[in-house]
Image 1 (cartoon, one colour):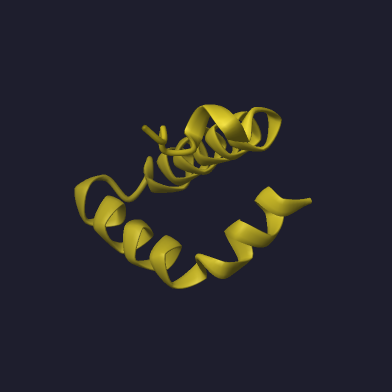
Image 2: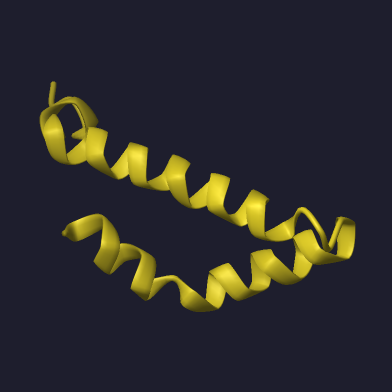
Length: 59
């Protein structure tokens, strides 16, 4: 699935986000990372389902 490949490509960003969130609240960091991943996955699925809605409008 495309969204899974996108997550694999973002491991460095995920580690950086994890470090930032862990500095805020180490106990909640894994949950917050999961929430971010789910939101990204929803956005990717929306784009895949209707790509023309995300393309620039040509005048």
